[in-house]
Image (tube, rainbow, N blue to C red; front, side):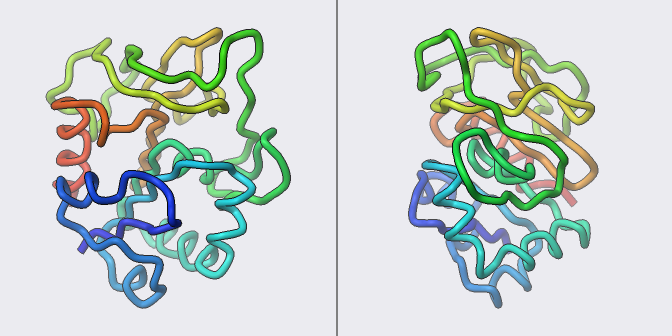
Amino acid sequence: MIAIIDINTGNLSNINRIVRGKVTSDPYEIEKSEKIIFPGVGSFQYVSQIIEPIKDLLVERIKSGIPYLGICLGLEILFENSEEGPGNGLGVFNGTVKKFNGVKTPHMGWNTVNVKSPSKIMEGIGNDSFFYFMHSYYVPENQYTVMETEYGNKFASGIEMGNIYGVQFHPEKSGNDGIRVLKNFGGLK
């Protein structure tokens, strides 16, 4: 079962329709899940407070090796903190989520994703394909960056490390390529 973390935000029904998981924030359901999708819309501070009761469990499940896919804020929450404001992320990765400067925010609409390294969740999707973005903060490029996008500056639009996947774009709003990303994740062993 794929646990789709319910934080009272995001496009959960469309994600669930594609991967046929279970929308939940119940620790028991998360504990028995085989995969986790963390879709996030909203502020880092808000989400860091909402997940406090399940934060240790999420980190434990990620460290146990089950596949995790963070979408937008679900990617950002993998890091320690954000320039958006107070609150602690999961701290799976070191670093701070940054605010775009010198460009209109939010970065909203279609943009290309350059696949820098092979990615299991991008199998069957061409390089420089278009995906839908909606965010004002970004993860700087780092050693786990497998996809990059440019908006004012280049940023990590996708990361991958072992069982951990994260995308800054919204696959559930990105047409057939976005559906493919979610199905690729759902098919991981």
